[in-house]
Each structure stands twice: as structure tokens, then as C-alpha cells.
Length: 193
Length: 354
Image (cartoon, rainbow over all chains, first blue to last red; front, side, top):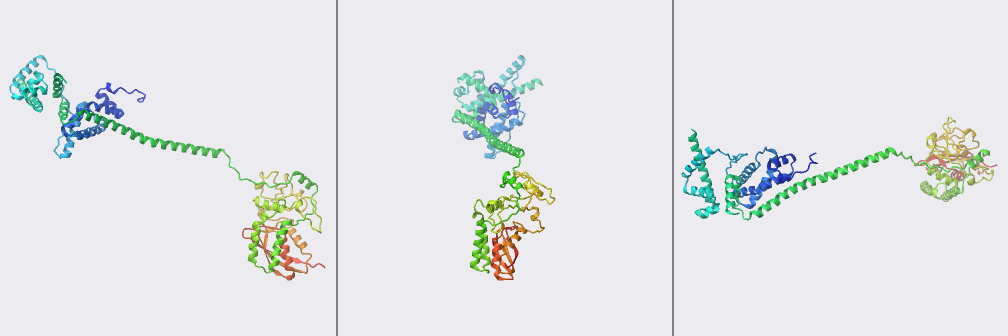
């Protein structure tokens, strides 16, 4: 009966549906369609770690080969996140084999935390904590965060405005965000206690 | 992308480590678009290879399965045909059987006396042999004579004319693989003896064979087993009881080559005309002997019944030796010779004509 059923349009299906379809039928077309949705990101990740386009391309093909078998074995809840972890681990494994470095793979499964939507009172408190913690940041981090989040500048504009490099801008923004988070959590902890 | 879109994209990437790492990685790429296209091509090739691998596996399996099926069907059809079609019996050659008119004639006027004489071709052969023996004398080289006789034996079937009964006899002999078969000479071929009246009626060709061999295989043949001697008399298109047959009709029972000619002589091989007739022939031939005496003549019988290698084993009077040899040479053929050429010693008693 399955043979008589018309093939569903792959574009209309989401990741989980495609994955189930592949796990049941084993058709390579379905897997390749699913993989092609994230192949750009996979290639970028491989390129970041391997720093060579040819090696990165070979790594992408290797990841696809692993996907053929692993996608049918594992119970995957979030395919995107799972693919990111698989790609990162594969790339790091490649580096380890070439350079024989110590490697600690990421957890096989990683989920992104969904954005919470706090109520109005808590939101006010968080804003207050944010202002207080922003004052505790370094000047570069504070400037970069303010230009990026408040003035909605892109990296390029911030770089041209402040004179920092693109990489420095990214670093300042990421580090600043982390420090703000730690500070807010600390204040929240004190408040709760 | 405009700055607003860039900002949005970058803001998104901050929340997504997958995107952030990828964006960082593209900083190392030279031409990301062509590289992505190359990757897409490689993946599509990879999928095609897998498909063709499956097809290449299925194809020979399919071909092999088809061949096995065809062989199986052919085998079954052949077996079925063998079961349906009856086994073909070996071809039975029929002898020439005289017409019913001839048989009726023979019944109405049974032959009183039958004299078997030698037809010209045999005489010619005998003469030839006697000439050879004359040239070399009574003590001719036995080996040479044997070789010569064997050679003539081989060529003998071709040396007779068509109408010759002996030829027919020989043909029949070679054609029919029925041991014990015998045919009498037909009237047209019989040369009457000077001193005796010619045979008035044609002899009935008679031959015998095993009941099972003949029954239903030769036209107009039926087998009678009334005699109790397991004898078969076959006469043309009808069945003739032994009791109804008169005259000196030669019959031979196939039962292990026994000859039943009124006497109870037995032997592995015999003259074709029978012992009694043979004796009569010898007596008749030896009547004009120059002297009284007895000669023992040894001869060999070939598979086709021809006689050769005549040796005088003993003699009371050497004068009689040539005549004795001639009588045997010119005499009727024998039956029972095999590939090893059976040897026989015949005694001839001569009486001088007063």
C-alpha cells in the first residue's frame, strides 16, 4: 500500500516529518533534501574548525555519510541542533587525527533554550538589573552592546564607528552578553534569598 | 543586505551558535557560492552512485533468474514430451515375401522334389577357387589361400547379379538379423541338373525366427506354436501349418540352431540346405569318381557361410583329392560360421563307376 501512496512533497514537510519518512523508507532522496537545508551551515562550521575549503568539503561529505546510518539509529528530537553537534564533533575529530590534540566532544544532544516570556513586573526588575550590570562592564563591551542592541548597528557599522575590528566587535558583544547574564543571575539570586 | 537586515541577521546569530560558527567559518572561504554548488553536485552524485549500485546488483540477479526460469521450463517441456511420445521401436526390415498367387499355386501343386543346385555366380567363384588351387597344387600355401578366401568373402556380396537368389539370399542374410534365417532358392534361379528333371514349382520361401521377433513385425506373418517344437513356419501372406506343407521344404527352428530335417542331427553349424540334402549332394557329386576311396576334407566356414581354406586331412587315394576338394568348394554354403571362421572336416566316400 505504501507503494501506491503518492510521494509527499518534500518541501512541504518539516524536519521531524522528513526524518520520520527517511527512518521508515530509507530513501536517500529524503535524507539529501533534509541535509541540504543545513548544508550551508555545516560547511561553515567545518570551515571554521578546519580552515581549509577542500578539507571542509570533504568533511561535509563525511558528515553526510555518517548521517545515512546515524539518522536511522538515533532518536533525534531536534535535528538542527543534533546536526550542529555532529558537524562540530566530526570537525574536531578531524583536527585531532591530524594534530593529535586532546578532544572533548560536545554532548551528543544539545537543545537550545526556548525564549521565555517573563511577565511585566519581572521584566521591569530585569531591566533594572541590566542597567546596573551594564555599568559594571568594560568600556569596549559596554559601547559595543549599546551600539548593537540599542542603536541596532551591524558589526560593520560598529567597527567603523568605534575603530574596532569586526572580530573584536563580535568578541566584545559576546563577552559582554555573558557578563551581563552572570551579573543579572547573581542579583536575582540575592533578591530571592 | 542593508544595515538593518545585517543587524537582524547578526542579532539572530548571537542566539544561534550553529549560525554563529558558520558565519565565523565563512571568513576563511574564498568563494562560498561555488563551493556550495560543488558540494551539492557531490551529494547528488553520491545518491546516483548508490542507485546505480543497486541497479547493477539487481540486473545480473534478474538476468540469472530469467535464465534459470527458461531452463526450468525447457526441461519440464522436454520431460513432458518424452512422456507423451511413445518409444520408437527399432526398425524392422521386412523381407520380400512372395505374392499370394504364388502361394496359392504352391498349395495347389506342392513340389514333389526339390533339387538345390548352385547358381552361376557361386560356380564362378568355385571355379576361381579351383583354378587357384590347381595352379598351386594340393599343398598350396594355406595362409595365402585363407587370405584370398577372406578377401573374396568381403567382395562376394557385390559380385552377384540382382536376380540371383543367392544374392537375394545373401542380401537377406545381411539385411535381416535373424539367426537361423534361411531361404530356399527360387525357381527362376535353379539350374536343373542334367540327370534330373527341373523343379516344376517355385519353392516357398521359408524362413523362421523367434516368434516374438516375427509376430506383428513382418507383413502377413503369423506364428503357430502347434508343433510343440517351438517351430515357426512363415509362408508369405498366409499362415501355413507344418502338417500342410509337403515336399522337401527346409525349415529351421531357431531354437539354438537346431536343424530339423527329418533326422535328428544336431550341430552348431550345418550346410544351409540341411544335412540330408548335403549328403545327397556329396553322394551325387562323387558318383563319377575315378577310384574307390575316402577323403577327409577340412575347410573353414566364414560368417557369411562361404567356405575356404580347403585342406585334405586324410585320403585313401590321392587321386581322389582334387575331386574331393572340388566337391566341397562347389558345394552349398554352410551356416553357423562366426568371426573366427569355424573349421569342419567332411568325409567323402567315392565309388568308382563300374
